[in-house]
Length: 356
View (spheres, one colour):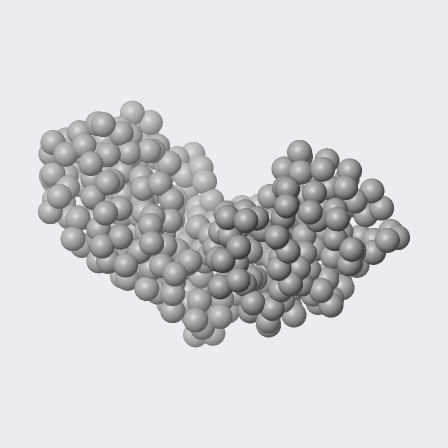
């Protein structure tokens, strides 16, 4: 973690920031090892300060190393304003624009009237995106868990079971295999609901002849996996087989194109243009993928507007889909490590059409 802080302080210098206030929970874990729900970190070239409250007084001592720990008597932001080590004159304080609420922004302005508050974007995210060897091993373990659960859950996918019961079973099995919990709310969407890219599991019961989309991830020691498989309950008709084949081919082509130095949007374009050429362009309306690590959505972003460039040791999802209203949809998603020798697929469970 000291190396992470050093990389961050170099970014602060380039951005002409005197301090950076970290408020994103996953970034607090990444930079300080803190897993609690209430905390702030204040970082400069020479100072490392961590603020939390009484509920975490023992936990913070156990988890957070290399920071001066400050316990809040009231709320964290009021305590921040009373810190004597902050400059008495004007200084530039960066904050995480994606995380800080407007209410807390106003509070910062009130308690630190001499600070120039500077919104920052991707300072921590750029460091998080390239994984260290130990991080990659944890992601691989999280991927192994979802692979095993998918294989085990197949006999449970049958007519009459509800989406919500299937989702519950998936989450239970992930925990049994060592996950601390699901990386996000498990998606099970069947029949016409498989055309909902983020369809929450409902009380709808599975029926023969339907697509069933399963999208789930495991958290292992703070790192996540993200897997999607679409299976067919029964025998596929011609249209179902065609749609599945197009999505499968689009995903394979995109994965093969992953390499360090390539623009993320160029990889998205490969899958998107293939699907468009097959007549389903309007039915693929989301990005091709995203980074994963301590969060399920990290940099880089793979979509048509992305300015991100792929680098070695990034872990990304590749998840093209086709969604047809009132009919159904197909999405296939795998987690892939970008290496110096090309892509390494971390999720290895069956991804060709399964007819159950």
